[in-house]
Amino acid sequence: MKVAIMGFGVVGSGVAEVIAQNADHIRAHSLVDLSLSHILDIRDFPGSAFAPYMTKDVNDILSDDETKIVVETMGGVEPAFTFVSACLQKGKHVVTSNKELVAKKGDVLLALARANNVNFLFEAAVGGGIPIIRPLTICLAANRIREIAGILNGTTNFILSKMITDNMDFQTALRLAQEKGYAEKDPTADVEGIDACRKICILASLATGSHIYPDGILTEGITKLTKDDVAYAEAFGCVIKLIARAKTLENGRWCVTVSPALVPKTHMLAGVNDVFNACFVRGDMVGDVLLYGQGAGKLATASAVVADAIDCAQHSDKRRIYGWGEAKDGVLADPMEAPVRLFVRAKTSGKAADTAKLLSALSGCEVADSADGDLVFITPEAKEKDLRDALAPFDAASVIRLF
Ligand code: HSE
Image (cartoon, rainbow, N blue to C red; front, side, top):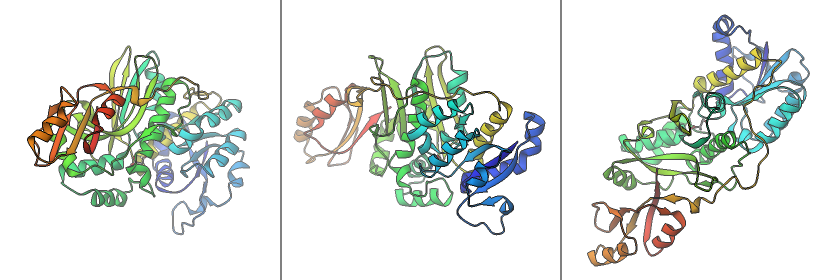
């Protein structure tokens, strides 16, 4: 079956490589024949082995009836949304690794795929090479999902790992992540938690059946974290990770957040280091499940894209049901209403009397030994809004949630 690729960047070129290298294996094991038809990109790639497939005109793909599967690895919403919509309307299956597109336009594109009796698959959009969309949708289908918590951004996990174990500063670690091709072109999306937010929105949409848009989701990145925070976290037996989390509260609503969190070293997510991603899922029947692997990188991500293309080829006349419907009211909770414990690093005069006075506002805190002028403690569990109100008198340099 003919496959076209839109976008010949890191992932798109990886998809071409995987198809070229493993076509025989895929034919033997999955009983489908995948071959490239076109590669769309506005750039020139002279000397590339894939140069004969290159086109700058999307109509070459749209008008080619033999191209039944289109891989979208362009990134961003436009023109990807316009091109993907046109492909679905032409009755072509579409596979994408583009989390921004799925998080912002998934409801529209899934409806378009349904209307045209084709598939719109996006296994690579969350967790790169880690299988997560199918496990959540198929393997755990008998469960009510209670919680999804993931380290879903390889760049930030790499940076935090380097800060923790190699004592590297933030900028040096970010540069290294960019050199290795993990970070987005504009690393803001990685370091500010925006990329992880798109990914948790996709997983939360799958779990709830209602489109959860990234806009309005509480999202904090890692740019304000310091080596002091990392060191004090260690004193409490924790590591700091960027955690994307969707959790049901007692009222049945979903609290969806992205923020740094102190993860106890005993928790399975604490040992997820470097560019690796992991996704922890709690189902009401299965209990706890952890999915772990490479969440970014050319071939790891291409592995998931090509698996989706194989699925489309194997089921070219059937629809695969991985998706959700339009956004419904009453699904999301206000995160400030959720119970939480907070790690606080505050500046004080250094005088014991001042410190005691401040702490008297918050009973039951666990206080760490700290340098002069630092007051470092973890609050007891309470509604986040109430804790934030009680912390108002503190000159808090860092406030970080506990996982
Ligand atoms: N920039 C992303 C990351 C790539 O670092 O995880 C994979 O989505």
